[in-house]
Image (cartoon, rainbow, N blue to C red; front, side):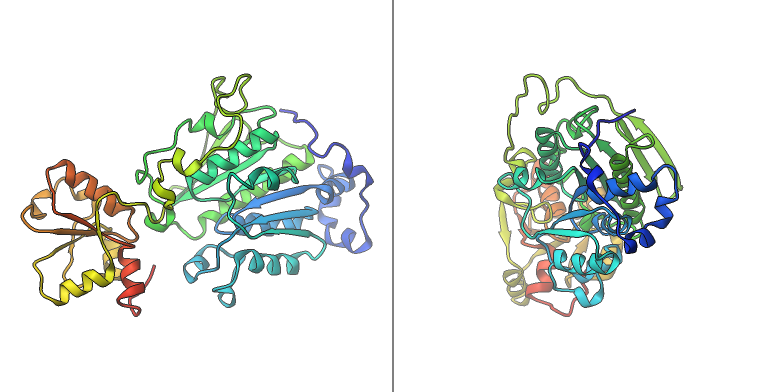
Length: 395
C-alpha cells in the first residue's frame, strides 16, 4: 500500500560527498534506491529503543545503510550473558554503558551517521519528548510495559513503529503505522497476566534469532524511508527457526482501540507497569512478592543450622544442571500439578527459580491447593550466587 511521505520532502536539500558516493555505491546503482533514495536515507531520523538482541543487528545495518541520524535509547550496561546474541557489544565492553558501547561500534561502521544517545530509562515522563524528534521508531525492547508505552507514544505522535519480538526459537515482526494501519493494541488489547509469558532471561533465546528478526526490522525501516515495496503494515510475520518457516497473519485495525480512536479512552501516556500488573514498580525479571520471603543470606544461615526446610526448585532440568542450591528438590513448574504429592504440606516450603517470576507463580498455585507454609527466595538462584556463592555459574 502506498504510504505518506515520512520526510516531508526535506531530503531534497541533501547531497552526497565523494566518500559517501563510494560508501553507498551499491545502493545508488539500484533503481529502487538510486541517488534520491540515498539522500532520503541520509535525511531520515530513526529512534532505536534498546541496544540488545534486536537493537544490535538493526542499528548496525541502519548505520551501514546510511541513515543520517540514529537515536539510541538504553540505560543498561553490558553483561557477559548478553554477548551470545547482542553482537554490537564485545568482551571488552562488559560493564560499560550499552549506549556508549553501541555508539563506538556504530561510529566505526559509519562515521557519517549522527548518533543521539539517550542513556536513561524510557518512561511515560520522557517518551513523547524523545520520540518527537524522529521519523520512525524501531522497538527492540523485551517487556510488555515498554512495548505498550512505545506503541502509545507512536500513535499519539503519528509515528510508524517497527516492531519485533523473540523467544527461544520463535520471532515476530510487523510495522504498526498509525497513519494507515493497526497498532500494537489491535494485536494485543490487553497484556498477559504477570508471569504467564516468561522473558528471554527465564526461557532463553537462540542467539542467532534476534539477528534474523532485527534484520527484518531494519529492512522494513529502510522500505518505509524509501517508500518502496510492500511493508508489513497489517501483517504479522512469524518465524520458526526450528522448522525454518515463515508465516504471515493479517492484523485488522480495531475501531475500538483505546489509542488513536476518534474518541480515545486514553489521551496520554499512563503507568504501564500498573497496566501490565507489575506491582510496586517491580521489573519482569524480579516481580514483587505478596507473601513471605527470605533472603539468600537468611536461607544459608537456616540451612547451616540444620533446620527442617524443604527447598523447592521450580526451574527447568537444563537450568538445574548448570547450578543448584545444595539439598534442593527439583520439580519444574510445568510438572508441579502432576507432582504435587512430592511437596509436603506439613513443612515450610521455600520456593525458588532463576530470579523470582516462576517461584511466585508456583507459590500462587500451591496456595490455591491449600498450602500455607510458603516462602519465596528473594532474587532466586541469581540472588544466591550474588550473596552466598559468588563462584556459582551464572546464566
